[in-house]
Length: 431
Ligand code: NDP
Ligand code: HSE
Image (tube, rainbow, N blue to C red):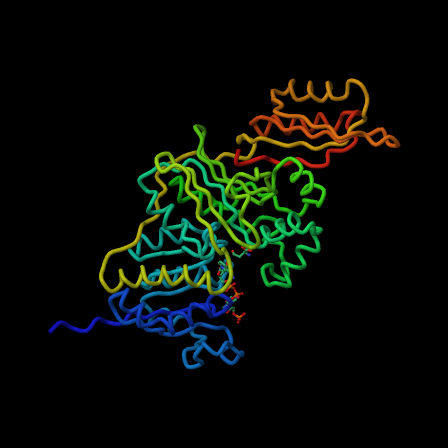
């Protein structure tokens, strides 16, 4: 008779929004999960700073410990759901050093310290899984890291932040002002009390760094990602976008060109026909363009305790299978050695909306300002002037142009007497 399989001992760090749901699902679905792993699974303990603080009823007080080192020593698999850089980084390195596999949802840590963690995992020959770090419940890490490993990913466009998608969607569909929409996102629990990381684009930038690193087999650090949030978007911008058949979305865009790799996060005008335009509320979606596979779209819930716990549980099963049955998940792949380019080196289509004096020669002067800097106009719209001000609104869409050239056009327009104000400069994507 064969020996009964040894249990896989799991330690959880951070029983918060996601961690609590991981514990609940691990407990409720234990029988099924053990069948899928091929061995018994056991929660060895849950690390907290204060064992006497009140907790959700699914957290068994007997499992709580504030002795992180003893818990790590006892575990085969450590699930890090604290978030942020420290102490999460130190706990993960200690766990890997002790021979435990690690599962995390921590995009901030991976985008800033990924190479250190991957190198440690490779040296210790343990798994490091992080499906929940990008777009919550949506399987996107495995598809990019494994399913598309035989293809060439050319570009990824992602709505990877639920809070900002909710805010922009409310501004579009219910004509809410920015501040009102943010307040509503906070009341519904999408946005944090301090929503800075979401609305300034930092959360999406961390996800862009992770996606670019995986898609292009190239280390891309958070600092390499150009980042512009949604705080400057007005109800006026949203209305103007709708008039031109667009919606405004905060996009994470990572692209491989002949020159290298670019990674950026910014609000963009997306045509209504594009699949990303139909992503409403706090939902996320990731649109992948690959050489052989063509276009792929991944859609679902990008945040929330239970959806995110689903992705964490998938990683736990994968890592636990390897612990019980042998084998290892994919190592970091960063052989490509491509330059990571600044935003100035990338090309975009732009829409420039400006207030001008409604006088002869003004439009010709603006057209010549663009032409002299090599920026080609695709379309021009002018709104009738208001008789009492003598001003008009001009909206110019450009063909794809280098960011650096468009920056020179904007400098020249700002210095021009004919232009009283540049109301907005938005990139157009997905056409
Ligand atoms: P929470 O803030 O809800 O929970 C964090 C947990 O970590 C709490 O239990 C907290 O304990 C504990 N913790 C915080 N700081 C420390 C510390 N210094 N030492 C020890 N424990 C600490 O976070 P979430 O559950 O929302 O997020 C967890 C991770 O999942 C993050 O990396 C996040 O980016 C990621 N994620 C979250 C999503 C979501 O929708 N919430 C979606 C996708 C990813 P205490 O209660 O004692 O403060
Ligand atoms: N704050 C993030 C969002 C949570 O709004 O999408 C998931 O990272």
